[in-house]
Image (tube, rainbow, N blue to C red; front, side, top):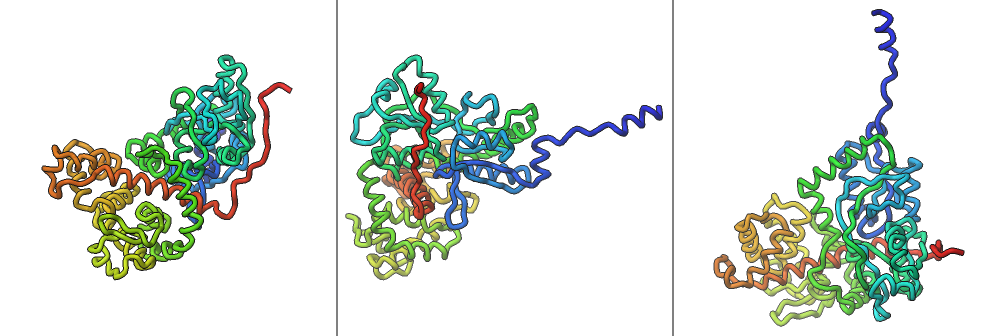
Amino acid sequence: MLCFLSTCSNVTPPPPTLLQNIINSGLFKVVTTNTPSTFYEYSGNFYGIEYELAKGYADYIGVELDISTSENFNTIFSDITNGQAHVGAANLTVNNLHNQIIQFSVPYFQTNHQVVFKRNTSRPRSLDDLSEGRLEILAGSAYVQLLEDNKLKYPNLKWQEGHYSSTEALLQKITDGKLDYTIVGSNAFSSIQLAYPETEVAFSIGDKMPIAWVLPKTKDLSLSNSISDYFNTINNSGKLNKILDKYYFIPEKEFNYFDSRVFLNHYKERLPKYRDLFEREAKKYENLDWMLLAALSYQESHWNYRAVSPTGVRGLMMLTLDTAKMMGINNRINPEESIIGGSKYYDHLINRLPKRISDPDRTWFALAAYNVGLGHLEDARIITESQDMNPDSWNDVKKHLPLLSDSNWFKYTSRGYARGEEPVNYVANIKKYYNTLKWLTANEKELIPVKDLLVSNEAP
């Protein structure tokens, strides 16, 4: 017995799991890409879906987030296999291309694969048409497998694989006429198309595909199971949808090429005149980002300080006479006074909303109220609740706002008729301008480099 006990006391404990090692180190290491929907930095603040999800998981397991960007999309996978990072999070579509070395986490979203071409050129109708032009895709992406799978059906299909950090460089090459086609994810493309108005979707390929993180392929499932628990938790709480809604969205109206060209022109020519004012006034309020204020102003006036509507609202922030008086503004067409009044009024609206409403819903509600008024917004929230949906969720309320113009509904509301469809489009537009402003401003010092680093799939 004594011998047995002595032997047992010398048993080597099992090595720590992958998850335990991360917790013990105090760092969760993530590799991603620098894009509007994944991760980027501006003025000391970090943005992007993958950043917010990764930061959320780091907090979930009680460690710090160590996030880095890859200059080459394809190296994300080698960073995982050689231990440089614990997770790759870069809008990655689940596929079998790297299944010998990595595994995917539980999916958190879905996307369509879309063929993109240059506007006012011949539109391809199928993969067969792509053989007539220059097709380039990201090396190491799911699009490689997608095209390989279609090679038997379309034997003339050929492409090149570019070693870039993201599809941004490929969209720029299409814009510059150096490339005819590429393939992108639908959600990522909708979030950045405003910055690349010369690009257009030709068609989608196949069914929707899941998006997930990549992890090292191992029998140790501790990290994988923990990430699954995390995604289940934030999905059930609604936090996942709130994060996705900030960056991915379905436009309420079709993409408008002319409006996009005008926006980019005004970004270069008009915004610099007022940027300091937007920045100064936004700093006065806890809940106001200057780029959100600028996006609101663009939706209202296209940054035209002389703008006047048929109903008499005017100026950069298109204030009514009553609102201007309430905010202490004497001259609505004075740019400085208008921005002071508009920011003050937005802060007034956001503080009038119930405290239980959290961001980003709180922001979308305040913007809708700027357009349609708090009273009509409250009517829509009451209707939403009467239909057993959440009156504190923008996604639920925006489905019922159009009912304010339906006599079967507005006759029962406190404030009566309103053009309820208008604030829905209004908020969608501001969200689009806001996300694009953040991306353009974060990258204004340096254009995306485009280098011809290609690998052809054609035999030598």
